[in-house]
Length: 212
Image (cartoon, rainbow, N blue to C red; front, side, top):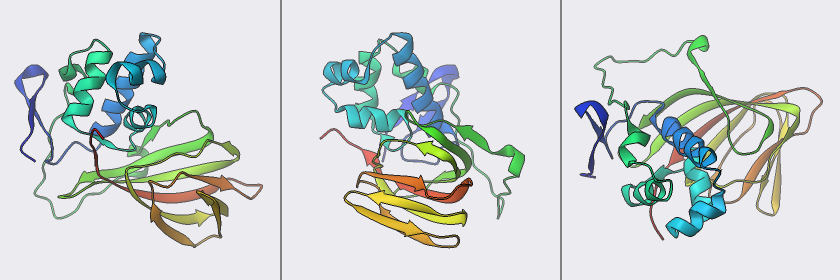
């Protein structure tokens, strides 16, 4: 895409080009923080923007790539300059043939109203057709969350323990070493079926969200 958005400090954030590995998270976190600061609910923002609560939630929880029109509507509803949500997000390029991510360099994030879900981001990168992100998801024995949707596909590998993936009306049981690839647009949630924490490697292949 040829979108180019001016941001703070006279730099540019390139929409459709490579993004900083945490840019999508930062945008979502900033939007949610501003919404809570104004004491607005998702319904409030949905009514003001004409967007669905589901889409706004996915933007806040990094389950989609907000297009410029989507971000513009949300910014207006939150009475915030769009540049504030993307400020200091720089484009990083490297000529190195590889990238090493040390264990202690992972970023822990929160998503939705979940209990017992620990997301540790390993790496993110924007490709030609999608935004790719890999996380280590630890499901504690008491983990609970409502089903969610993601604008794109997901790949999940059970590293330790066992779990059950609820996909719409279906339930898929996975043991240690099992993997599953599925359409994230189907409401889904992983559930720990053991008495110990389960550790999953999850990769998201996100596509941009557009106003429908």
